[in-house]
Image 1 (cartoon, rainbow, N blue to C red):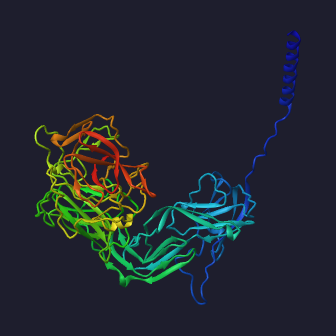
Image 2: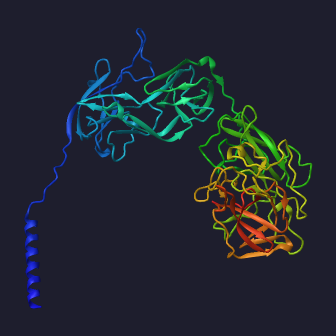
Image 3: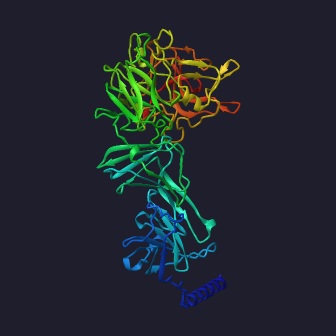
Length: 607
């Protein structure tokens, strides 16, 4: 043992000695990159014009004192803002030369360029690594970028221009298209080197309208390369925030990088602006867009013509509006047209509606239509008879106190049964549009619809697009004697099973279809003899459902199905045929799914 100890000590001493020798050696120091000072020349792009013609005024043709250019190498932290003075600019204004300090060139194997320039500096949004990219915080500006060849930067135009002239006292404009095409972006990034094949661009966060300033009579809209206005555009002209004139151009327009689409003087084609919105019009989507809006008082309302719960997916080709049907949730054949909604129209990307002077409790379905009357999207209007509130629940979130479309709350009666007005509307799993619910506990059919669009049943499946165009069509697919799905395809994320509320979710703003299922371990109370049951503090009626094999109404007072957003693994062929639900049969929780073609209730929960 002593011999081993001596050997160990000798090894330790030898190791310590060797470490000490290494520590005595000087540590190599990476040479620090030193900034360079160079005399740089910035050259504007040339403008090709025919002999005897002048360059379009819309294009920048000369540098001016005060113009600012960003020059960068690899990192944004090393970029330099160059401000031009009159002494730097050539006599013809086409170039500017000056000494620039603090430059950090960046060498790449795939190009000879080492420095990159962007104009105007006010729009540059380079972050961290720049490499050979120029990133801009807008697209509605005359954007230019360049790479160096030695000490010279030959700029290239990044955007194209839509140009026109209009005489009048205007200070700003707004441009949109009927088809809601992308006209601008919150940022644009380009890769530009001395190798032409290296050029490319990409955008982020599209905008369906662009705004800008009017200088004198010139209106210039800067658009990204490749922008195509397939059916022209709509222009509004403002003074101090007030719209004075409008102009509609109906021919296609295509924008190329560095090009100018010159429309000339449009003064004679301007129209006086007529505001379609009176001061009394209320915003239905002030708290968010939805497929369902709750009305509690008569009046004039507006909401953006967008797909369901989206804020950006504007509908294209809208020419007007229509009232599809109205109901009082009763058998009364006098559920008269116009007793909930008198009229629906479309103006300036908004759906406009006027309610009846005395608003009757009930439900209605309205739509945006094209020039041929085809339905582009539809919205459910819900007029409850009593105020809606939220109740605590073991549903993962606070829930509404009633089913979607119900006019009153289901009461926990101990004699008799609850009011059938608490049943609400029926939905096929994954669809956004409602179907009429049951009239009463007597099982005597659905409540009546007033209007041109009555419910239609078909026994063949439809696509999602067809279901949107035909919101009154109750579809199913018979597999032998058994219907299973209304859709020709699987739709597992129709209501946002694993993510956010989708454009097909039927609930009002602030609510959504529950994401998860309710298990049989929750505190259930069943009172089938009195027509109700509850989960925790949330009360539901035994309101039956619409069958999946043709839409017959059945099991009123005996069963109920409450949808949630999950799909199930039940598959026939390659189609997911079930939606997740709480299936109540008699006085027990009898399952966690039901056929997607079945018409059943939705109980919205707080998002």
